[in-house]
Image (cartoon, rainbow, N blue to C red):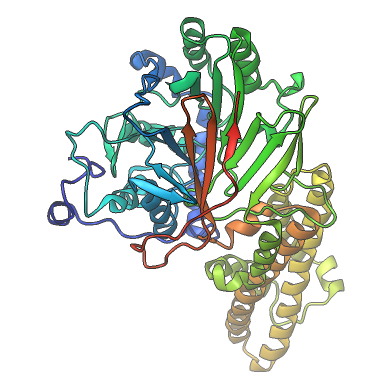
Length: 556
């Protein structure tokens, strides 16, 4: 039996399959994670440039359109479906969102919204990297618990379905685990998987469509996927149809996808396949950034672009820096060609995001294992004649010490390469990386100097060596992470650099959300962003939720 197949009851599950451990939020600054995930990312990136799993999907079978268009408006509720992305991190946050999505009805204001007919997982279904164990423990188990003590009847086909779009974290094993879970008609809690490929099209009532694309690691659509959507467009898409386009990343925030130099296959799909048939994309939706932000077209608010990455992963910032340009995480105005989109709502608010960023002052407490790395780097100064106090002149004249300093500089510069994506990115990578490296070198040399002074009276060089090593390692394990936290705080808040690194260090499990979308008989699409300001810590408690803003209405 597959470990992630739905058990018939909680008692049966406990007797047959041990309950998976309830994982906490991923510790992104854990050195063991760096080694394991870094190697996997390197391999997947290298192979992804030479082998594309989607080529196999083209020969695996024919996937048509998933049709929900025949909706009985007189007997059934309004048609609803749910969207959430970036889930499968900590148990508490993932379970909190799943427990709300699983409810048969949610009361939002004066509305009683039925559970979605299907659930769309919009990318990065698991963290830190895709494998069977992570999917089981971080995604499937909390979703199963959200339906207990009333598990679904596997023979009742009225249960909702689940569709998934892979993100970069799902691609880190070449999409093997993703396909094993989402392409095998398995149960994930009360939802049954349906798709045969990593992309799909759903025909919705009132002439709406949902097209979900897989952009792999290279942010492109493969030829087989394009042919799949072209075939659907030529046979079923009609002039006047309305399309929701879902992808794992908000490309419209990262670059101008209409620029020919960008060579965006997403823009080509919209222009050459959808609009060529007389249909129109009214809503773009994606995850990747772990917050909620909605941009509306300035001259026509029927067109919306929404980032909804609040399914369970660590919170991402929404505030703009004081000096540098606002990057993708905080840009209030977005240009798509000559069309302007203005930000209408952000969750959490920029003020709350700014306040939370100062938790990086406690970086050491949140990420103490990073001290093993900084302690080792700082203690390396011990081996450079520890019985002699180090001065600046000694450092500059000693090739061995200069080599050590160059290594520290290289590490800091490499880390700075991940800095902000604004126009001043290259300047910050050079200046910011140099200042960061210089601060660590100066601090390490100061600690080495003081330790040599303290231990010099021991006389025996071996004793001096061991004592200095211990002092340098302990001081480096404390001072190094504290300095790194200050660097992340200043870089993100002043220059818009390292915003992702700063907030991944905090592992904030609150401020989660998902979207419930409703289609009315007259063709109006309503979007309800439902948020969880504070995630229950007990793991089983029902989360308290709020509506982030008034329902967004798209009236074609």
